[in-house]
Image 1 (cartoon, rainbow, N blue to C red):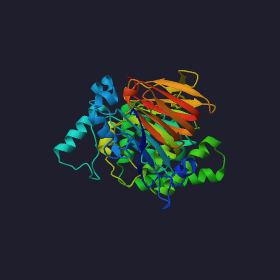
Image 2 (image 1 turned 120 degrees about the vertical axis):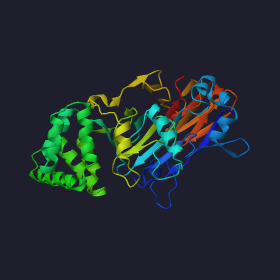
Image 3 (image 1 turned 90 degrees about the vertical axis):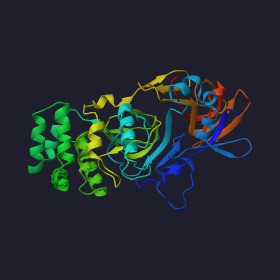
Image 4 (image 1 turned 90 degrees about the horizontal axis):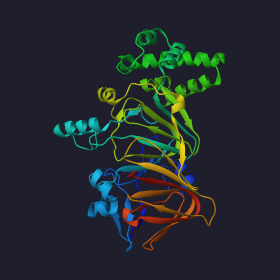
Length: 407
C-alpha cells in the first residue's frame, strides 16, 4: 500500500473562523468553535493519522519511522534525518493572528538547545522553540486572503507615520529619518515595542486616524489602511501591534494567488482561508496582537530588518505541464504545485521520488497508484503518498494541491 487517506487534526485557536471550513468542505462544527488550522503532516504537536487496509489507523510519524527510506525516498530520508521535511495546513482566520517572525536554521538550533538546557517543558506557554527547525512558508489563497508581509520601504514608513503621528510618535519617527538603514529600522521597531506606555502611542495614532477618516480627503488606499488599524484596535485595544500596518506591507491575495515568507520575515495573517506549506516546524516568535507569550528580545534577534517592495510580495506560478503549475522558492524543504483537472474524464500521471501530500481544493478526484491501490477524495480531504509509489494517477474534475519535497 503506497497511498493512504489522511485523518487530520484541527487546531482551535481563538482567531480561527468557525464557518469557512464548514462552508467550503463540509467539516462538522456543531459547537461553532473556531476552526483555525487543519494540520497535514508528521509534526508531533498535531500529527495526522493514515488509514490502513484493515480499517485501523497509524500516526503518520510512526508509518515513516518504521521504514523511512522506503516511505520518504532515500535522498529525502538522508537529507532530513528520516523525517517528513514539510508541514501542510489549511489556515482559516476570522481575526488577526499575532505579529510574528520565524527563526532561521541556526537560530532554531541555538534556541532549542538553550531552552532544553533550562529544562523548559515543550508544553510551557513561555517556550519559544518547539523544535530545532527553521520555518519559511508559502501561502496559497483559497478565498480572498488578507495579510501583512515584510517591512515597507523606508519612505513609506515615514510617510505613513507622519500622517498619524502626535507628539509621542514624532520623537521616535524623527530618529528613523536620521538613520534610513537596517540598523535604524531595528532601533525604530525596538523603541515602539519597548515603549513604557504603548497604549498612549496607539491611542495617539488612532485618534488622528479617526480625524482623517472624518475629513474624508485621503485616497481610498489610505482609508483602507486607516480602517484596518481601527479594526485591529477593536480586537486588541492599545496593543502596539495595532501600528503594524504602517510598518509592514498590506497585501490582499485573490483566490489562486500565492506569496512566500522566508525565515526572519515579520508578518501577520488578518483574515481569509488559505493553504500554507512550511518547513516541518512550529517555532513562532510573537510581537503583539496575541494573548500568547511575547518575547521581544528573541523576536528582534530572529527578524530580518530589510524592506520588501510591494510588487515583490506575490509569487508567479510556473507552468510545468498542461494541468500543473508550481511555485518556486529557494528552500529545500517543500514544493507546492496546483493540478487542475477540467473534466470528469481528465487524467494526469505524476511521478515522485519523495513522499507527498495531496489536498483536494475543489471537486472529486480518484488517486490510483501502480500497486492498484485506489482512493476517492472529495474537496477538503487529503492523502499521503509514499515515495514507493513512484508513479500515481489522478482522474476526475477538480483542483488538487500537491505538497512534496523538491529532491
